Figure 1 (cartoon, one colour):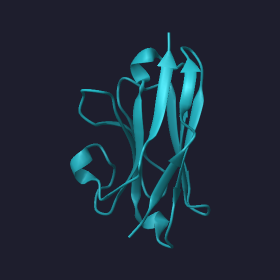
Figure 2 (cartoon, one colour; figure 1 turned 90 degrees about the vertical axis):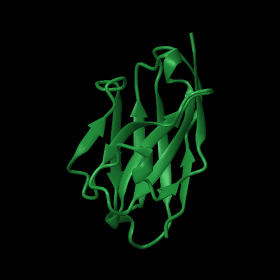
Figure 3 (cartoon, one colour; figure 1 turned 180 degrees about the horizontal axis):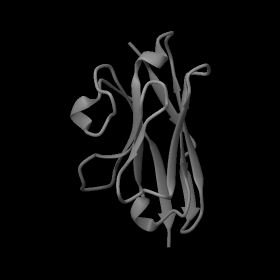
Figure 4 (cartoon, one colour; figure 1 turned 120 degrees about the horizontal axis):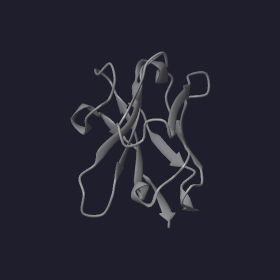
Length: 124
């Protein structure tokens, strides 16, 4: 089992940047595929970015390609999401996610563990 704790959310102006961090508990962190999802009010939770167990493969939603970067540090049990050129439509609660079986997390149904979420608000 793994516990996930996000940090780094907040309020930022459009065009600004934020870096989200996710700290994972447990000694088998490198065996989990990791990802970031987000959920805006009245909308379904959607995949934002995903990273494989080794970090060698990453995937991004089309809406964030070229602006967001996911990375992981298996030695520190950490996952990061660097968000640049933020837009008001990026406003949402962002969730860190871990999967046991998936190669890359692209859907909420693949997630085995969720963090509690961190709010990101982008003002225009």
